[in-house]
Length: 274
Image 1 (tube, rainbow, N blue to C red):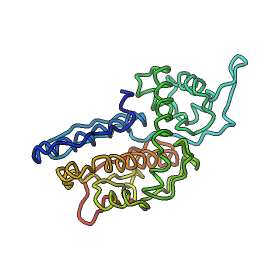
Image 2: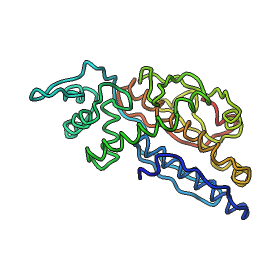
Image 3: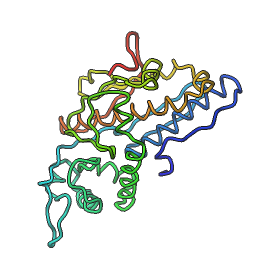
């Protein structure tokens, strides 16, 4: 639901034992994940467990290519933000191309940002049951959320290499993603030291970004007791944005769907290694 686009502000929890505290912390991360999933338009399942949580991605990453302002076309004298040929060239399926062209026109999309390349628009379209109007509403809410949440400031606090505009859109080439962890604020440094999620610097043999989730390692009781839930929620938003943009860039380069692959960390793997 669109009300989950912004990560929640949780009240200080009551101390009711490890099981209760762990459930609250796990549920909080699950809610934040659902919020970012709605924001980004990809399918995600979150389930809270007594001492941990499980998360599953579906189609995190889309086949695509760079879209330029030169891809504008006209139909019956009406200027379109995206031409049918450009959408097809980008990889939009034949049976969805007319709807994606209409969605781009509704949004006035003239380039890859904000999240407006043809296949990312297809993601919004699919996420809203192939309803163009609902997809357009979701896209507008998404871009508003990214601007209001100060995503550019958050990404800069936790790392370097990703260029953002003040409205939360990318300012660099969408097929390149060089952002990596380099915390510059006390909060970001704390989250980096104690975090339990990250992305490996090297992709899979199929060029898929690999995410590291050590969901069994955190002290959930301590996170709740010390009122650190919001700190880790913000770090989780950064992680999800990193996963999205890494997958998106890899897909654009390979011109095929490349999902981000979540998994557990092994010996010698640090949650911040990205």
